[in-house]
Length: 308
Image (cartoon, rainbow, N blue to C red):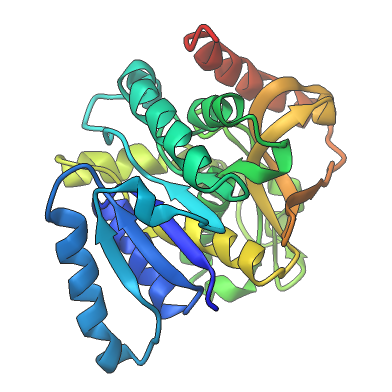
């Protein structure tokens, strides 16, 4: 029997995540939304693509949480997207009510699932889902570390005009403008990028990575990124469902790691059948630690707005 993956929110991110997950045949998919017809229509459209793309999973569109029962993984994309001029933090109160309600329903019908948060502000919404669900910390995580690192890798590859497959890099920190792309740990085919890219160009890449989400928001004008966030969430789901034990940067609950407490924060973790199985603490310089602490303060400030 195939495992079930629920995606809450059938907007651009949710529908695209359903597409990626179906193509990878990760399991049967339930696409849920409060708007009648939207998840049903998109699910049927995906079902009709199966003979063309040769994937054999079932995609169900629904407005009823009962259809999500016994999901192995739940990806939460529900909430309002950013618009030009908005920061992720502008969405705290707007999305709090949505994410809290979604989490309660998910826990009621899938008490053994893993939750992957996509809704913004991501670290704060992951923290909210963790507190509301009562799940152990290995079972609730945010996808932004994968996304931010993918953007960082993309810009490195674009600068050097090489395959992204040759780039290894990751980003620490909150999913905001104070995230910390780690230059010292970034390599191309094992060669540090500092040997391949001029310092001013590296700093430009770092800054573009930090502002990447806003860059897309400003270009789209009526929405935010969806291909890369959806792909990032599905990569995490795949690591869990296939017990791949991949080392991926994810937003997880910290209890002293990196000197931080009681917040969700992007750090490298081993992701496998037991969710976020182990947090890996990379050695940091004094300058990197200062940048991490600055990012953490931003996340903490956002979390305090929840008044939990």
